[in-house]
Image (tube, rainbow, N blue to C red; front, side, top):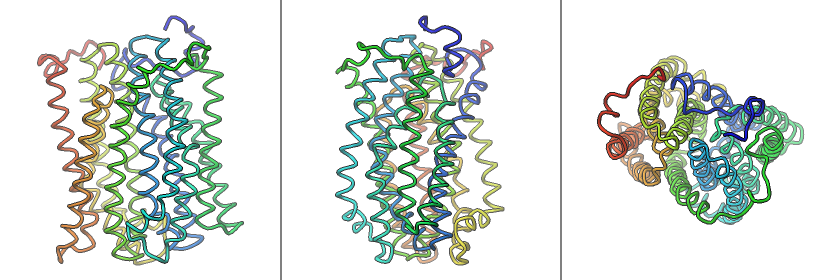
Length: 467
């Protein structure tokens, strides 16, 4: 990175993770990213809390019934951006500044075209998909309206996700945080404006989210161009590199398919939930929102591990990859145990934040106590995914998605069909699928590790003062 001076490194928040202690690097990178991810979830939380309390349980159910569908379409776009970020981090680790800039521009081309196409297709398929999921008739109009608004805003969401994935690949987890904080505050304000004052119900919540994401993405781009030396692009950096774009697509498409298959599996589960009526849908929506918050530390540490792995893989620092994975697993286990205790004691309290209906609170409170038993398996999925994605293992992304789909399509139907379990099979199935997916991911890691690292590196990575 000879073209950068010390001032530029400082002002752009760039973090080289190929040197230094693994734990301190993971924590330093993770904290801003975790805060940012939590604020990202506050978009959904704000929609749910404001709509659920100001409009009612049916409106909350309408947003919940559409969540898996919107996640599917967003996943198709975000996977490509993630693939571009991984390749960028590898070139950053190699200290190949010219290729880093090419990665930024060529990923940008893909992320402008792909979301527009996906959004248009999603808009036209929204109603058939909701019908396929057997969405209750009383919440169908609001669910359809919310999905279609989010389909229009998918390009806006992709702008932010693209720029943040590029910045994080360079070790900058702070800049995306700043603009997410701004966007979240704006989103809450717009929610009150559209939902409460203008009486736009679910439609208002969707519009508020789309506007907030758009302004956050544009602001993030402007800031990056002005402060980050890798975004100070010249004309030659904008040339289309077909080989590079092919590499980005080769890695990004399997990740997109993984995300989309997970979304499809969630849709399959949503179909089971819908069959139990509005109370079950509202309870599932509330517990899903809680789980989205629980996912954030896992997702953050996994994404941090991906950047850490990508940079060190590019720098051929394989021993640091193994060491970082082990330290991340310890951190994950501590968090899993802590949240298990919290959810066992205060599950109903968290559900009560979303809705006042006593039946929904009772069902949701027991549901989060069930799923919290499986948090360790959930964390394992994210840790292994972080390492393998950072190494560019495209096959794993596809494999993991297939396991998730098979589990979601079979386990919920099997468990809910047992009279003694009934509706509770919805939440027991979530945990069972996490175990299946986590175990498969761990086996893939063991297989991949043996091929990549010498046995002495795996079993006895030297400390060298970097752990």
